[in-house]
Image (cartoon, rainbow, N blue to C red; front, side, top):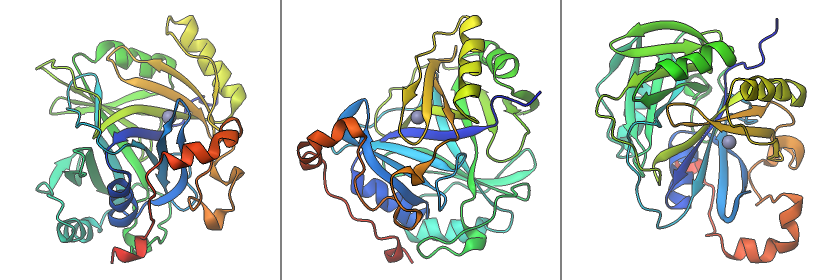
Amino acid sequence: MTPLITGIHHITAIAGNPQSNINFYSGILGLRLVKKTINFDSPDVYHFYFGDELGRPGTVFTTFPFTGARKGTKGSGELTYTAFSISADSLNYWIERLKKYGVSVSDVLTRFGEKLIRFEDHDGMGIELIANDKDSRPGWTYGQIPAENSIRGFYGATLNLRAKELTEKLLTQHMDYRFIGEENGRFRYGTEGKPGDIVDIVIDKTGNRGMQSAGTVHHIAFRTANEATQLEVQNILMKNGYQVTEVKDRNYFKSIYFREPGGVLFEVATDEPGFAIDEDEAHLGELIKLPDWAEPSRDRIVANLTPVTLNPEAYA
Ligand code: ZN
């Protein structure tokens, strides 16, 4: 049977200053800002989508940035590290690049036989770059970053939980995930077990809850092909006792949300229609795009947003 869920669709975080957010993800990490819109549930806040050149599912890190947001804290019930995938020989390029921009980088770590580095953005958001030779997604060029060193998309995500059993059951019995392996208290799950679909659970023995604010993840979205498969997922989850929202129209995909037993907000989002629905592929992210219902209030909405500039070329 064709799986209903095929990996990670996007990961959404809360951030502070919008310009700093663009500088970090677009300028330093070289992700393309593929959409500049508003938080549909809170229209006074931006919603930025950073991804590969088209914002393909599995590459899109999104943020709700607002100036003056207090910093959150990592803790249990949170997605604490978002891992991106880079080619096996790109690690030194990234260590040099991050140091050049004053980002404090961990020593090179090894996990499941692959080398990685860990660092935080200016808001304290946990990021990892995992060097590997399992990623078949091609490199691409953005700003000043050569294609061979580009971030290919997500590798996976780390969920920091008090216990794993109920979340493991959800992933493996209702979401097409399977257990892949365990290393040093890190339990790994994947749909196929390749970059873009990995979910790791780490048991947080302190049990301290995190505080969700700037520098923490708001939710993780998993991929499903289309509206029909999404309804199948919704039905399976509801039959198994999960409180799932109705389908919400996010313009670039359709979404359902529910809270997994460990406390992390999960979303299941459709691969269709994607970010080229309201902008030409060559000009993604240049204008502030609003959903139809917000267009009548465009002047007021835009007046409340801090203007930002996009200048990836400045990050040599
Ligand atoms: Zn989302």
